[in-house]
Each structure stands twice: as C-alpha cells, then as structure tokens.
Amino acid sequence: MTNQHLSFMKNFAAFLLFCMASLGLWAAESSEKNWSLYKALDGVEIYFQELSCDDPANGLFEVYTIFKIVNTNEVDVSITYSMDVRFAGHWYRAEDTDTPLHTLSIGAGESMSGSCGNGALSVFDRFSDRPDRGALDEFVWKNIRVTK
Image (cartoon, rainbow, N blue to C red; front, top):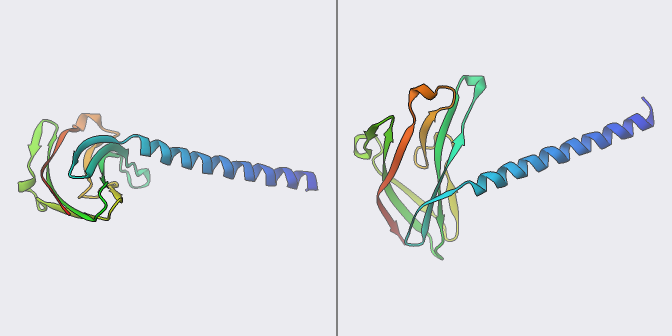
C-alpha cells in the first residue's frame, strides 16, 4: 500500500468518526428538544416524551413514554406521586399496583430522566411491531407532593 493510500484511509477514517460523533450529538440534541411539559408545581417541572426501546437481538420492539423532572428551585426537593394509566381503553390504577407511590429526590437546579423500563419515570406505551396489541391512551400523575 502506498503512502497516498494510507493518507486517504486515515483521512477517510477521521471523516467517518467526525460524522458518527456529529450524528450522536444531533440525536441527543434532537431528543432533548422532544420533551413536552406535562405539569409545573412548586418549582418542579414534569416533562414527557416517547422513546423507542427496540432491542432486536432479544426480539423486543417496544415504545415507552418517559418522564423528566426538573427542579428549578435553589434547594433540594423530594417529589412523591402516583400514576394511573389507561391502556387500550382500560384504566390501571396506581393503588392496585405493587408500587402505588413513587418518591424521588432531586438536587437544586438538577433534573432526572427516565429510560426504557425505569418504573418510576417511564410507562410502557406500545409494541412498535404490533400496533394491533393496543397502546397507552393516557397517563395521569396523581397526589403530587413537592417537599423542600
């Protein structure tokens, strides 16, 4: 292999790395922009968005609704809440589950976000490969209490 070929391959590899890094930054920035405000209470903002949680290697094709809680206060807070969900036309009440209440602590000026299957900050939405299996119709956060 000539020096010219090696130089081209190095430049091409650097270009590919730059493109992948740029795409990763764009995806993260795009995801940050997709949050919708659900509720604001006592200096705490609650946002939500859908997140694709496909895992083809394990045969899972799922979408979750995840939540982000932002503490805009200058002090640490604790937030307690329960959540009811309506899935495929049927209500599932928090008081009928194993974890009727969630309690989270968030530092001053900080935030926390849910991820696929994180029980406190996510809820199953639907199977992305099976639209006939029903989907999340609605969620309702209840008994929200912010303690400073």
